[in-house]
Length: 165
Image (tube, rainbow, N blue to C red; front, side, top):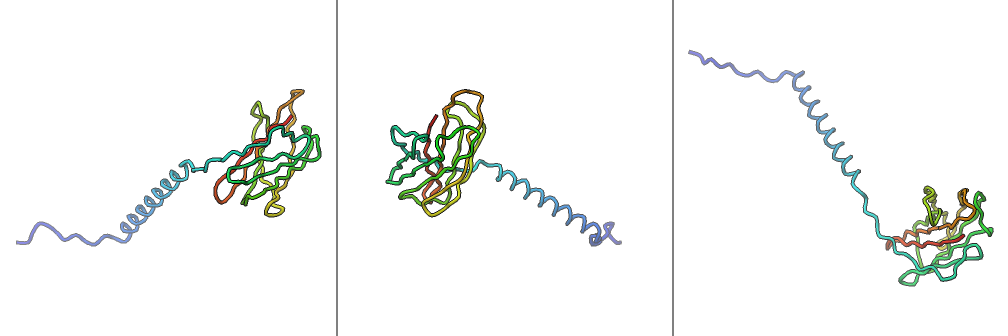
């Protein structure tokens, strides 16, 4: 007497292809989801070492210098002076005893948020970075302004805040 069980036939090519396609789609979707979640993780940013701006500095009258721990300095020059809202002006950042991969400036009010006005300065040499900017037009008769310089170096990020009226 033969058994009641019959041998299982090999899987048909159509069914096999359907399983392979399903597995591939599941793997791709899973990889995409994991990649997206990793991309959403906050990026660690190095702390900014703040420079000490020289006392009595007035950018509307002349250059101002900030000193950093370890002996580096940066000098900020705006021209032509005085700088007024709605008028383009030149910004130069001169570095002394600092090697930068990038220099950015952020220009805004010292007393209220007026949106982001951050831009990268062009390297003119290893120690000179320059660009143009414009103070935003404000409805107030008088505004206190802040120009923040950020210097990215191999050892971290340096920053200096220059306030002017």
